[in-house]
Length: 131
Image 1: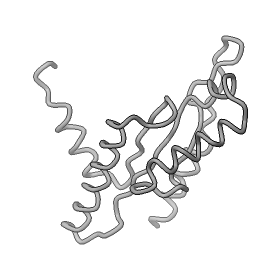
Image 2: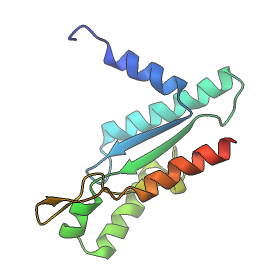
Image 3: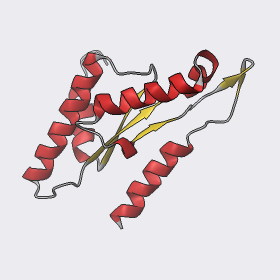
Image 4: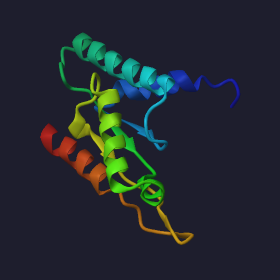
């Protein structure tokens, strides 16, 4: 496994994907994450040009761990952070493709059902718009 070029494997999968969802769980994106998002989007645009399928490939952002924020921030601060995140990626990802949720929320130490409705809606919308 140590000899595997995971970067190449992942990059090939991204190139073949109509919808790439970048997942983060720590709130605002770090500079390195923003560079990855930028690289993915710019590559998607180039791949679409090369294949003459302009707008075919799409990029979205899923911000996980919203359950943690609900215990550590008030609703105004959560909304402010959401707006900051949308602004961070606005060059590459439209705001309606930035969604928030909790894939494995905890309440009183007990795992709860996922709260991924916004992510499901984003994916379903993408699928339905292709038809």
